[in-house]
Image (cartoon, rainbow, N blue to C red; front, side, top):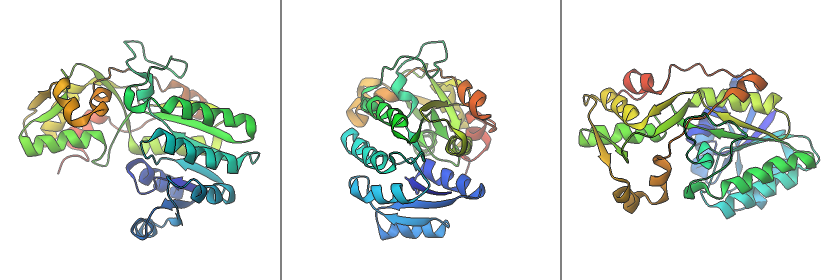
Length: 292
């Protein structure tokens, strides 16, 4: 298949592009600029000039190619919704796959029982717009689109993602700084394991499927910060950033970082045979891709 991939130069999108190519698919990435197109070319990815803020620039590729994986976002609900709607409308009646990226932050605090795909939603303010887009995507299954929604947990690996901020603070300030008291838990997923799930969903996921992408772990944030500090050579030293102070700098993002979550990825395993294989976030922080 030739897959239209938004966010192709981003953290998740780059890993997805690699997984698609390894599986024998062709990839056409959304490029907002000549520079972005050049980066895609170096990765062996064709480019389609367009922008998520210009829905009409997306419809043609969504219609012409064999499927869509949407990993890009503007973090503006109205803009993202219009972009997704344009692609879904272009794919109506085609039975082609569209895989949409949401995230587990739509669940809010989950408590001690791991939340599955049937859990009620209580999205933190930063992603309050996402459930409506999820519904729009899943409902398109009734209009001839093989639509799938994936909610990744905290994504790590390749030295990137949110954990990289912990490592950066440790290297610059001598201690890994986290928001809040650090007792809340983060579910996690390695970026390459996540890309494997996108591939499986694209190839075999039934229309109207919602999947959580997590390896089943739920480490306390302070423990994750200690691993980041150790890997950065700072002896596991950490520093708490009170939530009220963090909000002044980070806004609603600060509240997302203090969510306490446990999330189940069992459905993806049973439905698609997906099995995360990475050693885990603590090992990667201490001895893996985050260690310079």
